[in-house]
Amino acid sequence: MSNTGPPEHRGRDLDDRGEIVEFVTRFYRDIAQDERFHHYFHTLAAVDWHAHTLELTDFWAGMLLGEPEDHRDAGEVIEAHRWLHDADAFDEALFDRWLEILNTTLDDGWAGPMTDTARRRGHGLAWAMAKRLTGHATRRT
Ligand code: HEM
Image 1 (cartoon, rainbow, N blue to C red):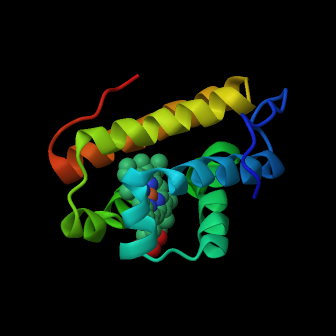
Image 2: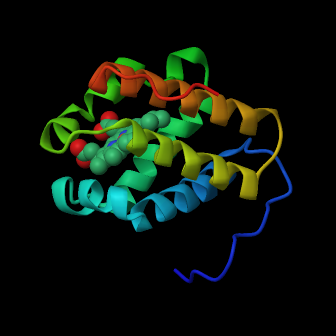
């Protein structure tokens, strides 16, 4: 994938599955390129990006477009990360970076109520994950 300047703003809200695919692609492209995350995705988990993109699209689509029963259980998502935290402890700075990339991806691409929901839910889950895994809350915004 080429990497020339900021991605174009979509000029709309993050409110259908096609936009969520684009969001997940952009978000995890930037996460994967960040040196702080490289280790987790490439060394420890050796993530299959195709499968991971589908899984994350379902996760965000469930949260944004689905009924409450389509939302993944937060505790389950948090626990899916525990082995990574045990292998190489997550800290506050890692969560701050994750949230910074989330904010930039959303700001650069989308605007509207669902975009705000994505930001709020992402922050909420990151906060809960930080608290449960590290015992420290990351900043709530
Ligand atoms: C900030 C540090 C984080 C790191 C380093 C990280 C890294 C990873 C990695 C490496 C995987 C693949 C795990 C595996 O294959 O076993 C994964 C899965 C996943 N991550 Fe994260 N993640 C972080 C935060 C988050 C947050 C805050 C969310 C939610 C908003 C999230 C949502 C997910 C989901 C839904 C999956 C799939 C889980 C499953 O297998 O059920 N991650 N993450």
